[in-house]
Image 1 (cartoon, helix red, strand yellow):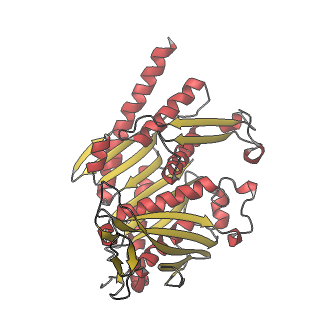
Image 2 (cartoon, rainbow over the protein chains, first blue to last red):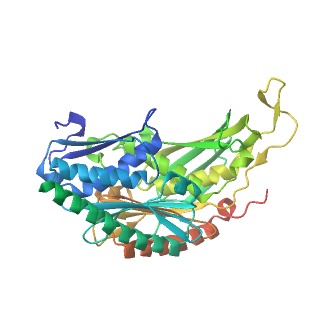
Length: 171
Length: 253
């Protein structure tokens, strides 16, 4: 898309992400979500291939039932692949909650409400490095280590699903 | 990994219900709290609320609104709102105050605390200064005595004492700038911020719990490096309690 004068960048494409809630206007939490998704996607899109253009990603929240940030990132990632925008790696995002010592991966809304800690993580599929980390709630350092380990395993599954999906649609 | 000199002063703004001014090196953030009476949410009828807003004053930096700094925080509204949301989440996660103390009448009236942060001098790393300013301002907050009229309206009463919030713990953050795969800088200055590819903010509370690990930006980072940063942040939080006992030390209400 053509980028407006104020956003244009002569070297790179400009990546813009908008997160729109089901009802009402966007508030600062949606702004936070959109900057987080924008950062994740800017790290994978090869922006140098399309200078002076805009890649606009709109995330319309339809039904929020927990794990909304990971869902948005995974969905946007698959959307980019579907659009044919060149990316240098695959991203997989996971949400993990913890209540006492019980961890739940990909929680529902009720799980998130009951949990004491909700952590959103996004990983590079190849080298398991962390692109996004966002925590809510009080936790200890060792809790965080365990959550990262669990999330890395879950991210591998998300990545497998993405690959399987695209391989089957290519045929 | 060193953080610049910090300073916090409480109660500097007399017209606000609570205020503080915090400095990290040259970066100065002022926090003013304003109390208003509001209606509690139906799901939590006994709890008050707070809203955080962050603004960069035009005088904070000569480069504000310059297009070349589109990627940094100066002049980019969406990222400033996102930072305000992160500050709000950190305060909520840390459970530093008991929101039930803000209740005036259950189900009818509660105090809503409007936390307004203004950066008056930008020299890199607003987040840490802002969080310290909020902690100090909440400590200095005085809740005025109220009485409820017959029609349900809340009025300030002349008798009774103002009360303070009991604050269980303060979140203390340290922000790291990720320059590339090998280099991580603690407490980036304004010049370093222009070069950053990623940021990591870690907040520990004064009693040793981790309440925020917020990594954003384009550059990815291994979990080992995050763990190293967590260790540094933990020691930093302990150091800050000793350094500013009047602000972060135990409050006897």
